[in-house]
Image (cartoon, rainbow, N blue to C red):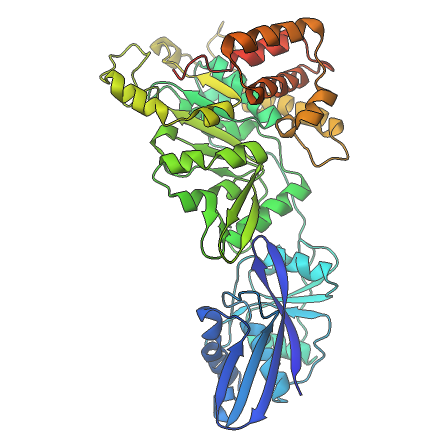
Length: 512
């Protein structure tokens, strides 16, 4: 008689319940795992045999028998060691070496040869799917329990060995149910604060607008003027994550194996800063069975690309879809996955290869080098950037300004800026209540017509500027969305002419 247990695996960014069926029959010894299993799953028979032997039970290899393990649905690729625990328990049940009712239970975990359990990736997504499919109990390795306990409606049991789970299931030694994990969400604490950056008030204002409406921004200026410092300080003015956003981000990072520790939960907005030598796949995601890349890991947070023009042309152009659609589609022969990419894109670059063009220092680049460098940022990419922020060299005297010097204006701290950003986000939250939109940058043409009505003066200024700057329809609507955010920061219910004029200041007249 076949025995059936349940396990699960991650497909894309979602959990998929997998039925683990076993059949024992007389004959010469063989141990087969069927159901489109990869090498890691195929090797599990050795881990399982050793773990069962070290449990004190008879391993599959101690008896002449045919052991067939079926992982269903058979047309879904099975990857990784997550099925070890379920397969081992199914064998113990089928061989009558233990007895328990597997109904409503789901088992996840990798077995070591001594029978101990190792943590796995993507537990949050798997627990979420298990609860949705009506399972009442989930068993996970020690270190994964806190993550699984984020999900309401399912009992979570955490153990460090196969033996402890068997004793619990037999009723001989109970494992305590994990308490529900409570999320304590707060604003990110960063080493850098906006008050640490001397000067650059225009850039700071632009970044405040970017944070308030989740707009994409590019900082351009000579080396050493504070672009990277501004970007790292940017994290300190972002609003805290909501519970829903925190769960969404934690699930992505868990699947990618990017959590810092086994019991870590993402409580602050992600800030990803890949090096300019990063490959196309590392940013976009992919592989034979697509996995998330840096763009998706920055979901609900910030993707900062320093030295933007030094990235490969292919990588730069790959940003077109996520910048516009807030989603990235990775298609392979065996699978097509939509990865979320609701990010604030923060870019920084020099005006030329040597970086001194337009500064007090002498530029050593010839016209050909400058043109080649600037052409790496194509028109479609330029069109998708909301704010172009100049970060120029500052007077050395400003570097010596003391924060508490008498008579010196006190520099604004990030905490004060964040309050305005949070207020603007609350206005947007009420505006888009009942829809999937959360920030102004996500508005489509339909929402722009509904929520961004311009008076005659504002419309006149915008149309004149659009003609003069030769704005594309996309850029035209981005200016309106930016003006809507500027109005929100000013707590203005309608877009006024000054808001349009300020938004126009952030359009590039040229690349430099």
